[in-house]
Image 1 (spheres, rainbow, N blue to C red):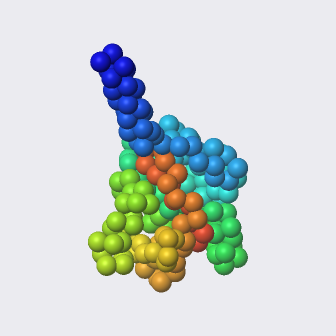
Image 2: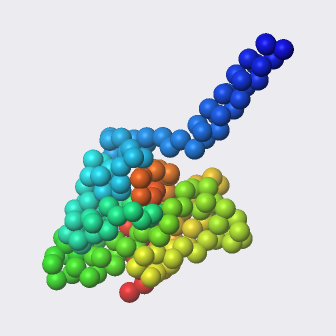
Length: 186
């Protein structure tokens, strides 16, 4: 009887540990830096060597405070290489004060209200028979879809971006690293 209670207690402890482990969020490396789930989007992004252009743009657009707020947000974060694929001079032009509104629109087009991890996006794609319409904070729409096990988003101009690193959890949402800059219909 005593052994049975000890074993029951051990199994209960193990079950609780395994159950809570599934809710634990792991630290993910992005751009050579750890992205801590206890920090917010901005606190993490500033440390990524792959996102210096995005961080500079967020600062220039005056969106730091917004992305530090409670959210939650789902951010599709283009890398420096993604920004480098834009026509020469595009980033410099967008960072000019007179283009503030356009910069804000493009950046908030990469943000969806609420927290959607890759499983949530995949479920929405399945429910939508292969496509999920994601309403962005800027008011535009991104179309999420899958090719094999890879997740993609397509903008209103038909340009697609692959999610290269998914589920980078933040205290105020989640980041999905993408390999292209997506833009709203102009």
